[in-house]
Image 1: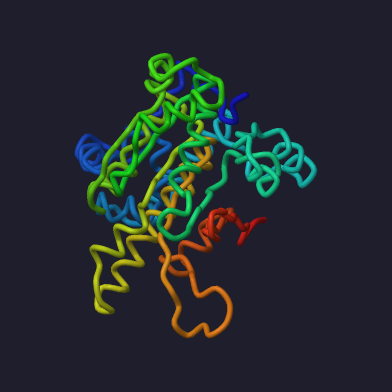
Image 2: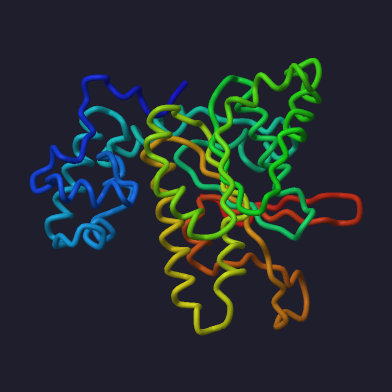
Length: 306
C-alpha cells in the first residue's frame, strides 16, 4: 500500500506552466534543484523568492497553485478533510515494523508523513536502528534513500541483518536487496543540504518509503563553532528541518534522522544528556526517541510523540 498515488503520466509537473516562470527563471530554479511543482511546495515561497528574485507576493501564488494541483490529483492528502476522515486516513497509513520490542513504543512501527528523530550517545544503537528499518523496507523490494553524514553506513552490516532475519540465505543472497538503496555520502553541510534540496527527481522516480539522514545535525555542530555562528547555524538547521518535514508530507514517506547529544552541566540530578540542535529540531520532529546504554543493556525511551 502506498500513501501517495502514482503520478499520472499525463500530469505536467514542469515549473514553466506557472504564470511568470520563463526560461530565465527556470534556469535559476534548476540551479538550486527546483525542477517540479512539488519542489515549489517543499521549498516554500520565501526561499523561492530568494532564489529567483521575484517578489514574495508572486511566489505565494506559485506555491498555492502548485499545491492545489497536487491536491486535485490526489498526490497529497486534502488539508481540509474532516476530523473523522483524517482519523480514518491516518489509521490506514502503512506501517513499517522494526519487528523488535521498539514496536511497543512506536504503536507497531514507523509511519509515513512523519519525521522520526533518534538521539543518543555514541554506540547507543542509532545507526543500527536505521539499518534495522532499512532491512525491513528493502526485503519487501521497496526503495530507500540513505544520506550518510558520518561515513558509518556499512552495506555488509545491512546484509547481515537481512540474513539474520531470514530474508536471505547468506550474504551473497542478501546482495540482491541492496540495489534498493540509493546511497549518498555527504561529508559536509554544503553537500548534505544540496543533496536534500535535489531529491525530488529521485523521489518521483523511485517513490522510496524511507529517507534516512544519518548524522545530519552533527555536521552543523562541527562546522559552526562558537557563539558568533549560532544564529547562522540555527537558520541552516531550520532550513534542513523544514525541507525534511515537507519531503515526508509531499512524498508520503518516512523520514528518519539521527542526532548527537551534549551534556548539560547545570543538571545536578537526573540524566544530563540532551540532543543538540535546540528547540528547532525538537519542534520539527514528530517523534523523538532517546537511546542510551545501561551496562550491557540498551534502553529506548519515547521523549515526544503526538
